[in-house]
Amino acid sequence: MKRGKKYVEAAKLVDRATTYSSADAVALVKKTAVAKFDETVEAHIRTGCDGRHAEQQIRGAVVLPHGTGKQVRVLVFAKGAKATEATEAGADFVGAEELIPKIQNEGWFEFDVVVATPDMMGVVGRLGRVLGPKGLMPNPKAGTVTMDVTKAVNDIKAGKIEYRLDKANIVHVPVGKASFTEEQLKDNFTAVMEAIVKAKPAAVKGTYIKNITLTSTMGPGIKVDSKEFIG
Image (cartoon, helix red, strand yellow):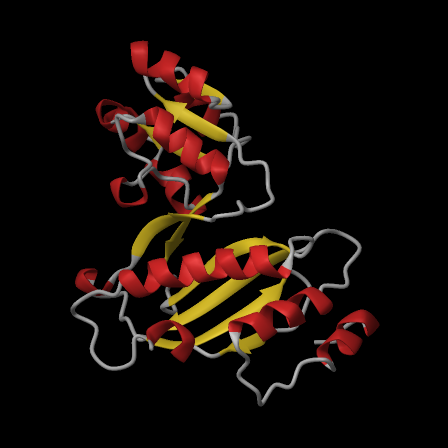
């Protein structure tokens, strides 16, 4: 794969044989984010889990101390008083059954996160085939199936992100934007790592965190020392 001149120059700043401390990795990720837009900084955490076994799955959510740097659009499925509560909490869209054809037939996806009250899950379940593959299905573990819609909306707007294993047993999560200060990125990254370390399934044997890579959207990968987080 041919890389652009900017990428090649940025990659020269990173020693691929070195595993950096989180502070050094954050400093480097800012230096190597040279695109014309404000790149997202992401952490990719390779685990020793085997996601084929339910007891080794990881899924949860964490509120980033400094947010994601992105405006998140929230859709809430709720009725009556809970719908009013969702609107007052600042949800971008609130509705019930009437949204099903709009999403299913018209391909409306102008939202980033879906929250639902438990009584609405029968309705939302009908959208499983379209929401599931996009990672938008509400889930109790992620705090998106709840009666406390105010807290759910507030947390998401404040920078709550979900994490889960992909098919290769890697967790991919955003930890902020390249325009954030080093301190903000480090705080966010630490919050993510603490949540994932805490989420270790009891059934996992051997090394839990195999390796961690920090990268910006267009930048090179930077290896981070996992010992910092697992002691």
